[in-house]
Image 1 (cartoon, one colour):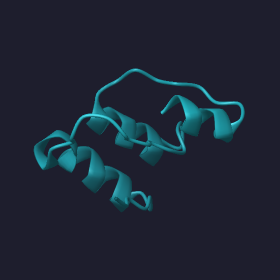
Image 2 (cartoon, helix red, strand yellow):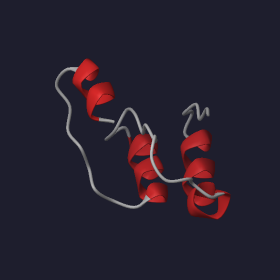
Image 3 (cartoon, rainbow, N blue to C red):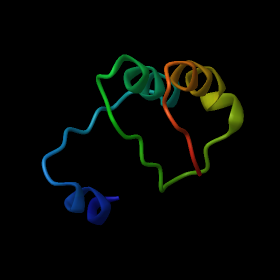
Length: 61
């Protein structure tokens, strides 16, 4: 993650739950949610995914 973020240039890291990160993207307060560590389970992100997608965000794996 450190190497990936170094390529992004100026950025801010937010420490909140997975679904809340998707909500921040939906609000336009965040632009990216990279995930390279522990597995993410569908029940951890389903609500946030639905909200971000309804707001026009693209979610990929």
